[in-house]
Length: 183
Length: 318
Image 1 (cartoon, helix red, strand yellow):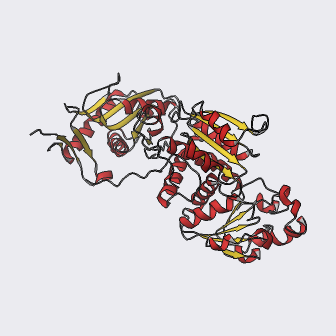
Image 2 (image 1 turned 90 degrees about the vertical axis):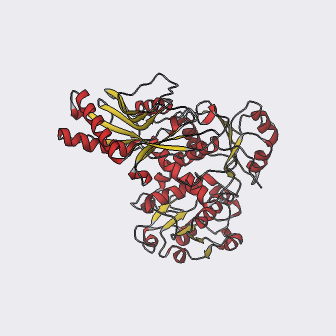
């Protein structure tokens, strides 16, 4: 087992600052921005981006939390190996209708979580647009989904374990890749 | 980094509160709290049970429980069919086991059963591959009722542990009592019961309840008062002299409610006999959470269906 650190706390900070700037640059009206984090690590990331956007524009966008468990495609009838994923909280303080929703997640991998998140969001209303911001894109998409804002591209093999740790939920901060070493 | 094992619900069936552990009850209640939010969305439906089939087999009259299960099934996108005893082969003398085997031949994932005989759901669970959910068996158990009561108390008072819950009325014919006593005690609450001696079975004491024959003693300082329905249709044998006398001794009136703790919750599993076991001023008063119980019933049933669908399908141990 070989564990390599890709980003430290300062690196995550710098990366998020750049992403926040890109989100502002892409938006025609900052007042429409609505950051929604995918449970669990997308939520603290969305909160941090909101603060950075507020510092740049003077307008702090609302932040929501989205649980996608009931929309997943890897539980229930599709899976032989049954499981009971624990439901996390969905908390959307404002309506999503006519907002530019920026979905925030820590790692973009197969794209299946994002598909579930899109379906979940659509059941809450009709956003003007939905964009996707991820701290890490590790490749290996299984669905035609791409991110609009990417913090860091990390080429990986499927057997690698890409770990994002955030102070708010893990007590440590950084991005690591753990590789299986043969022999 | 070590991660605590995720909580899970064991077994393929929900036959009663008795086989459940405290962490399992907690998991169901936590899941139900999230399910409750779905009712507040513009689209009150999630795809979690898409492609699953549920048969609601109600062989004893029930409106509330059956509608509540049907609503829960629809909100989770399951397909459901409801049977009642009239107008089906049950009327023609088919045995329960044959009815169930015939239904299973159509491969449902769940069978929700209400039956007048205790133990019927257990019998079915043993021979069927489908998940069996007990929606009330005789005077034995009614687990989803106890779960929705617990959910209602927890949402209002923030906890179950350390609370004093008084259950008053017909304890003899009620399956609600047994499930509630088991659940509340398992979660660390104290249960007091009261009713006319003819309607208090001896087993209440054996179950660890404080038994009172004066209602006032049971509700003094209580956090929750649960009133049970007097089953007037079963009172042919008359376990008390008159309805009027029952009201005088065992109805929850505003005066009696003042003996309980300030802000004490008033609950009733329904359907209510106004002016018999509960005074309308209490039933419609600010402390009543009777309609919240109905709302929470849908969420609890969604949680149970969802968790069993994701279960490992192991047969329920005896």
